[in-house]
Length: 83
Image 1 (spheres, rainbow, N blue to C red):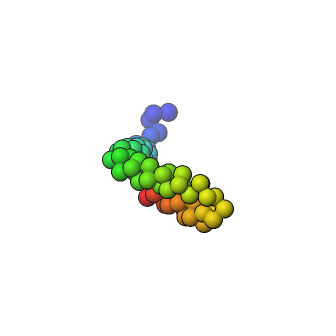
Image 2 (cartoon, rainbow, N blue to C red):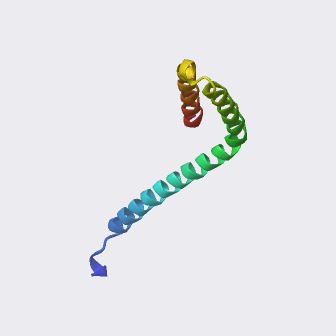
Image 3 (cartoon, rainbow, N blue to C red):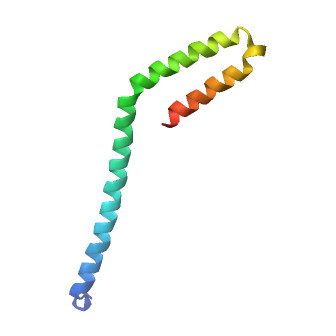
């Protein structure tokens, strides 16, 4: 069985393995990058979210007239979390 394997077959297999390895490395680096970007952003993000929570809390004292403002603050939260 090994006698029938040509040099080009070995090269093709090595090429496919290299592609698979490259894709694995690419996705792992992407995952690590997202983690560290979040770690860097989290203190600033936490402060902004605390301010938004304080605003929403103030708006809840008069809920009926502040529904639109509360909706805007919730949209701000969504926007900050998707950056």
